[in-house]
Image (cartoon, rainbow, N blue to C red):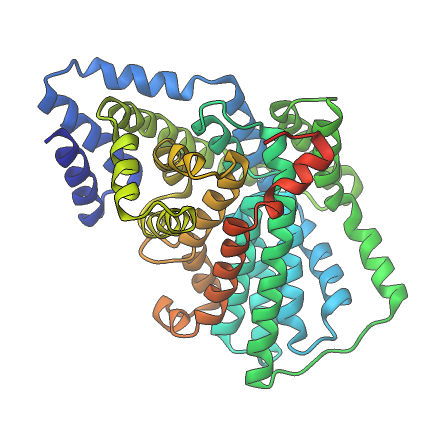
Amino acid sequence: MELIILGATFFGFLVLGVPVAFAIGLSAICTILYEGLPVAVIFQQMMSGMNIFSFLAIPFFVFSGELMLHGGVADKIVQLAKSLVGHIRGGLGMSNVVACTLFGGVSGSPVADVSAMGAVMIPMMKKEGFDTDYAVNVTTHASLVGALMPTSHNMIIYALAAGGKVSIGALIAAGLLPALVLMVCMLVAAYAVAVKRGYPAGKFPGWPEVFRSFAAALPGLLIVGIILAGILSGVFTATESAAVAVTYTILLTFFIYRTMTLPNFLRAAAKAVKTTGVVLLLIGVSTMFQYLMGLYEVADFAGDVMSKVSQQPWVIFLLINIILFVLGTFMDMAATILICTPIFLPIAMKAGMDPVQFGMLMLINCALGLNTPPVGTTQFVGCAIGGISVGAVMRTILPFYAALIAALMFVTYVPAFSLWLPRLLMGYKG
C-alpha cells in the first residue's frame, strides 16, 4: 500500500503540473504521514543527501559552463565548425552538429549548449534558406552530447547515485567515445535530411582558414584536455577539476579572448546560482525518495518483475531503456538519475552490465528526455529561439530521434564503446 501511495501521489502531482522537485518531496511527505513516521526523518535524509563534499563540483561545473556561454566562446567554435564541414551538403546543418559537440565539451550542459549554439546557428540557418524545423531539430539533438562530456555535472550526480560503485574519472573517460558516436549519428541524420530536402552545400574556405579558426577556438577547447589530463594523471580530483575549470574559464574569457564584460559575468554568476539551487533541491528531495524506495525494497521488486518478463540480458536492457525514456519525458535529468539509478543499476549489473556502461546508458536516456515533451527543456529553448511551435518540430523529428536511438543501442549492446577508454587510460578493471 505504501508503494501505491508513493507512486500515485508522485505521478498525480506531475499530472497536475506541480514542478518535479516539489512532486517528489510532497509524495515522500504523503507516504511518511501515512506510515506514521516522524516527519523529521525526511528532512534529515534531505540534508544528508545534499551535504556531500563531492557535490562541490556541481556549482563549479555549472558556473564554468555559464561563463563559456556568456563569454563569447561560442562564436569561435561556430567558425571552426563551419570551416571544417560547412562545404558538405547542408553545410550549416553539419556545422551546427560539430559546433554543438565542441561547445558541449566546454559547457557540459545540453541546455547551455542549445542556448549558445541556437542563438547563433538557428537564425543563421533560417537566413540561408534552411527550414526552421530542421534548424531547431539539428541544434536541440546535437546539443545533448554535452551530457556525456567531461564538464558534465550530471556525471557527478550519477557517480554518487551509484553509491560508490563507479569512479568519476572512469565515467569522464567513458563519455568521450559515446559522445563521438552520438555526433556521427547526428551528422548522418542531418546529412540525410539535407539531401532529401535539397539543401545546398557551402564552399570550402581552404586549409589556412581552417587552421586560423582552429587556433582561435583552441584555448576554449583546451578545457576538456586540462580536465582529462589532470584527473587521469592524478594531479587533481574530479571535484578540484571543476574549480580549475572555473579559474581557467575566467582567465580565458577576461584576459585571452577579452570577450567577457562585467554585466555578462554577473549574469553568468546569477544563472549558475539559480541552476545550482535547483539541482541541489532535486538532490535533496530525491534522497528522501530514495530512502523510501530502499525502505520498501523497490529495487528487489523491480528486479523480480523484470526477471519474470525475461531472463535474457538484451531484453532486460531494452526494458530498462524504455522505462528510463518514458520517465525522462516527465522528469528532470538530475531527478531521473537520482531516483532510477538505485533501482535499475543492480538489475543491470546482475544481467552483466558494467556500472560505467550503465552510466552512459542512463545519461543518453536522460538527455533524450530533455528533447521530448512534456518536459523537453532543450526542445522548448530551441523552439523559442527559432520562433516555431513544438508540434511543428515534432512532425519532422523522427530522423533525429533515430540517430539518438542508434547511438543508445550502440552504447547499450557494445560495452567497448563505454569501457575501452577507461581501460586504456586508467587501467579500469570493470
